[in-house]
Length: 128
Image 1 (tube, rainbow, N blue to C red):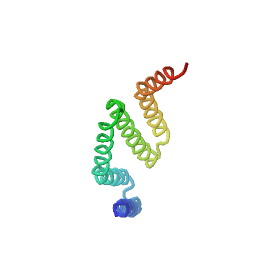
Image 2: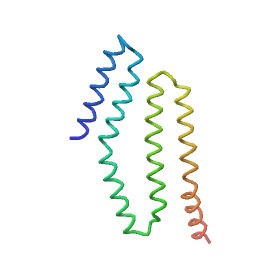
Image 3: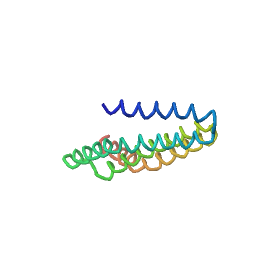
């Protein structure tokens, strides 16, 4: 099972971080980054499968492909923002973490405007 591998990477990284923190605490950030990158690389195949499924479903229905592309980008931004926020919090920089989180949210909202606009136009057309 894939989740066992992901948990294994996380737990092994945690043990290494605990050991390294005693001798060279400045290296723990690098270990955390490498562990995060390994997990992201591991799940890229799964993400690709999800994107292919959504694309094929979008092609079979009347869903605008631009909206699907936007939703995939927004989801990617949310994942990457959360990853960056976690790294910032791990290093003790909660102030920077909150700014990165806020920046990600603003970008997500700004990218969502075409979808929201289209939804409102549809609602206005339906209402008498």
